[in-house]
Each structure stands twice: as structure tokens, then as C-alpha cells.
Image 1 (tube, helix red, strand yellow):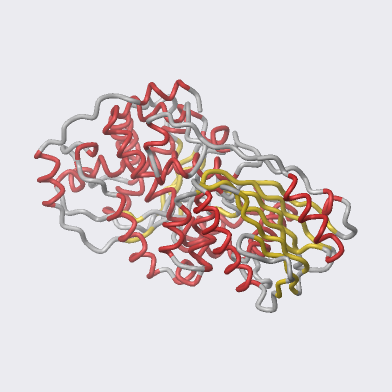
Image 2: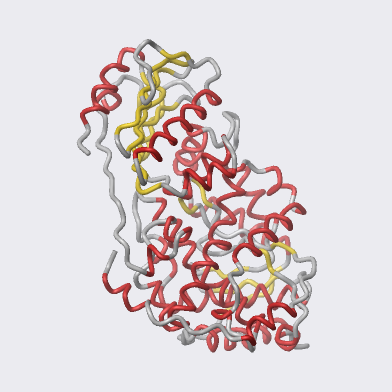
Length: 469
């Protein structure tokens, strides 16, 4: 992590009674969740290029919001909102705002086309393979169809950085429109000042780092929108809003059937950049205001863990590292094709534990994540995969807990899983219909491989044991 992140630190301002009073005076009403932006798959951004945002827009009955809604045409309102968000964030407007008014049918057509424009069939296939291999979705899950449905369910206007256009939906209420514009036009300012497409594409083969960058963009836009809503109070001086936002978002998403019926992985990861991202930004504001908060785009967090624990970022704490060589046992195995090498991150492990075990275990055990890598292989028979993974945890005890948790996950993925005589307290060797399984705890690490050719089980076990600390 660059030492330039020290620019983000400053003395925390004292919380004034004004901010507390304003927060207590807010009357929260039924809100609507709007647009899906950058749905995460493989803890990687499968996106509309920062276009559509999944966010719980709160309809607050306070004077500043009412004043923000002017009785004028939407295109003119967008120009005014652009100026307002520039004033709040301190990000200068560097080019006139391009904007178009669109119908619901036009938005749905745009989103469907964008998926096919941005992702080849091979890329969609690789993402779908990861989801199936880890057990996030069923073997008959159709990712492309799901993405189209998921993208279009909550669309209510979005900024497209590829074409530098703000698409303004013509159907939301004026109250909702004001909040959509506040959030999405902050993305336009981010784009003009930091080039969002370049920002999001900076990390390769590290989906956790990409997820962190997504949370920077969404959290920043959330904070700007909320600051507009609570003026003249200072968002930095208000109590943490993230717990409230998370609860309201989960509650309000129940009105969207595609989201409600989506696998746990999608629901959990879709909310992360907004709830945790906004909480991270609120802490950053308290440390240095908008000028220093904007600098996060220049030196972004490297992991999602820094959003669950912002002190890691703002206090410049050292991050753990881990590597995973390619295993000879699978590289040379007939019928095995390597698809990807990547990182689940704390976000991914929390999704895994939450889906297979419980939300409490995801928070407790997942919070002890330090680093990980995995390699995914596809086998010649349909929907058959192999995974090799290595992870580091905060202590040997934490690694042992993950060892036990992942053994539970394996038994739920493969009910027929049977151990052999080598298995013990921190080693499991067995077979399932999908192939051989090796799972071990070694110090503060948890390592495993699944979907192995049976004749390669012993070779994989010896190789995992040989990896240097």
C-alpha cells in the first residue's frame, strides 16, 4: 500500500450537536431500490461499466431534499444537480454534461445490449463456471439469462462512462429522480476527474481488488447523495449510517422478485459496495473531508477487508500476501483445462460461509481472512470442475475454524463424500462423485483441492504439504 495514502489522514473533527439533531429529526418513509450497477460475479465486476446502481434510495422528509426538486424539465434539473454534486464533492466539472431522457423499454434494451457488447460468450462461460465450481449456483444455472433479468429489474436511470452520457429515466417520481441524479451524477464527476473505466480495469486477476475499487466508486457516490440529503448537517459528524442502510436495503429489496429469488452470493455481493462502501467513506470524511476523500481514487484500497475494517486503510496497516503456484497434478492431467486464477477475498469468503453455513459464521470466521488465491479448472465432461485454493488467516485457530467450515461445505456440496484413513483433526482426504478431495490446515493457512483425478490425490497432497510458508 502506497505511503501516499497518508494524505488521507487528518484529525477527526468533533461531532456537533447539530448533526445529531438533524439525524434524529429524519422521518424515514418507504423507499425504493433502484438500478443495479456492476453486478459482481466471481467477486469480479460483471458490469454495465459503472452504469446502473443497486442502491436503497431513502425518501427523507427534510427541507433540503424538497428544495433540491425543482419544478422544471428533467434535462435542466440534471444540469442543476451536476453543479450541486460538484459543489458537495469538490470535484470540478471538466466537460458539459451529455444527457438523454429514456423510457423503460429503452433502458432495458440498452442493458441487454450492453451485456452482449461487453462480454464474450467465453467470458460469460468462465464466470458461470466459477459460480458452479464453488457451489454458489446450481449446475443448470444460466448466468446470461440471469444477468439480463437482474440488470433490468431495478433500472431507474444511470450514467454510462463509455459514452459519457447520463441516461435519465422518464418514469420515476420527482423525489426518486432527485436521488438518482445525485448518485449517478457523482459517477459522472468521478469519471471526468479519474476516468472510471480505467480505474475499474486497473487490477488483473485479483477480483477482490476490483471489488474494492467498485466500493470506492459506489461508496463515494452514496456519501455524496446522503450529504445532499442531510444538508446543512455535515455527514462526517453524524453517527454511522451503514448499519441502518444495510437493514433498509435488505428490507426494501423484498419488493424485487428477481433479487429476492437470486442465489445468496448475488444478493450479498450486490449490496456490499453501497453499504460497506458508504460506511468506509463516512469514516474517511471524518478524517479529512471531501478533498482527502477524493484522493482515495488515486490510492484505492487493495482488498475488500479494508471496507469491513477501514482502520486498515486509514492507518496504513500492512496487508498480508500469499501465492499459489500451478499444481503439476492438474496442469498435466488429461481432460483438465485451467480457466482462471484469482482471489475470493474477505468478501468472497463471507459469501461462501454465509451461503453454506450462516450469516453469523460468515461475519465471525470471514473477518479473520488475511489473503487467498485459487485456481479453477474445467473438466472435459459438462459442469465438472476442479479447484485448488490457498488462504491465510489471522491465527492458527482461525485457520482451523475455516478448515472445519470448509469440510462442512464439502459435505453439503458432495453428500456422498467419504474420508480415507489419512484423515484427522486438521487433514481430510477423501473421494466424492466429482473426484478426489484434499483439505488441510497448516499453521495459519487452510489449503484444499477438489475434483481431483483419483490417481492424483496423493501427488496433490504431497504438493500442498511442500508449499513454502
